[in-house]
Image 1 (cartoon, helix red, strand yellow):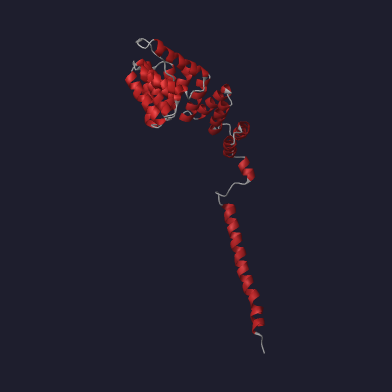
Image 2 (cartoon, rainbow, N blue to C red):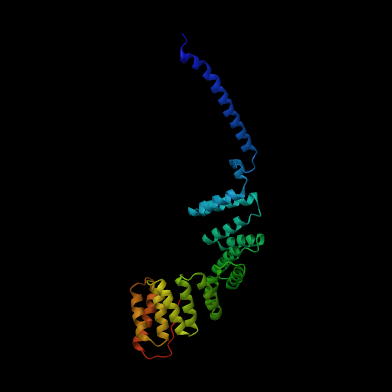
Length: 280
């Protein structure tokens, strides 16, 4: 009598070996394909030779607020590729954050030499020059950035022009910035300041109102609107806003200035020649 189970057990191993061989062959072919394909992931030694890899590590370091580590990674990137534009641009930003303005300017100048049509690099260099007190150079860089389509320079150029008392140009660029950032109260505050300096108090009040609508708790905007009312002869409304601002202010110099305006309103309520200055 033949045992059924033993018969099937004798032939099963041969069938399993056949499928195992097919499986191994498939694995070998797959490994060969992966070894030959040009898009295979880079190994660790490959990445260490890639400047982009070190640049990305620098970006991560900056997210964790580790600027010195980021600089080290960027220097590694540049040792692999001395013409790697992104590293110079980021170096400029980092040195600026560290207030090492000369190093920042040098890095960004190098970035622009490598990529003259980079609006971002021109903008960043403009910021550095402005903080170095080089207003003329900053203005040139902002204008060039705008020409290259880098719209973030619009507001900073408008503010720089305002500081230089070029009010018409400040308003022109401020209006362009307002189109780009219609919910930024700082833009409308700047426009109000420029109009106040031009003695166009009606326009100044309209812009300050828009700024206040966007930032209703900002005491600086209250003060600027109060000054526009004051310059427009609306002393009572100015007094209300200045007194309201005093409840929020922390800066002692500004507190003293507001108190002096309130005192002037009290002592000379009909002085038509008094003109207060706003702040951007």
